[in-house]
Length: 427
Image (cartoon, rainbow, N blue to C red; front, side):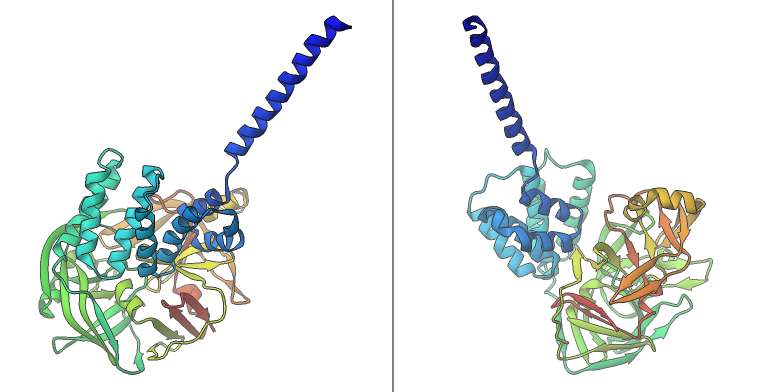
């Protein structure tokens, strides 16, 4: 009995140690609440990240709460508050991984761009390139060097300034491609520009920039179109643009060769596009089904949860817990790989693979996918869409479920987009 007791005791101790090791390992590998929130931020699902953070912030330490708020304030269009959180982060002497610090610097760059402080954006990019030279991938380095060209070219340009003198109500004109155009006055010349929340920056053709006497800045920057094709562009500054009873000063435009904005199959030429930085500056925009564009001097109040966020300069909308880019310049909705992956088996069984053509500045590209008839729940209504393209493979590194276009928007009599309280309301 005594001889058996000694090994048995050792086995018990060994067993306890193994259990303790297993529990410790499990604890170390189990994602923390910070990890869970940050994972949603990396997927650009800022709505889910916000909801998780609001529910479980007490389980996250103060420093990591501040980190999450850097990203969330940036995503929900509070760049000044995000920058304040960034200053707190760097002043604390935090020892976070370089990969996270790099992302925080990229948010800081984006904040300065949204504040139209191009000189500060330039300084942040220079800091990133010098500080993270070894960590940057080839694509990241190329992206930063391209951004550096842009912010350097714009460093001496004064910030965009917007004055809403009174309520504005303008009849929208649809062009031959069915896109919404607004009349703008520049240097005593009236021209029509497409209204497009999906455009990261406003755009103008070279001939139109010259006709409107814009200040053209040679920059030779690379711009990636939705097709994945990279095309060259310069920059232009419009000193003053009038849109109804609204005056916008120092508007930045990408300048493309006329040929890059020409679609020969339709004999269609884009002359100009009003993109996100102009639209966001209006604070609130209302679009009606009978094609009126309205900007109220006094914003609409909203008492529901925000369903609008911004990824860089791309608006995102939350529908049924899924995040989509929101593009008033797109005639049709298109669904991406994330949407396909959630019901892959069903789509593979019910639909036949087809080629899907996507067009934009620089040409068209073909992808494999399906044509489907999805139904979305929006504002308590079932919205059916027909013949929607569903891609089965990722385009670059996108994580959103798709891009919402006019086929969904026009099923409502009125849409309100508010960039202050960050909501999209359909009525």
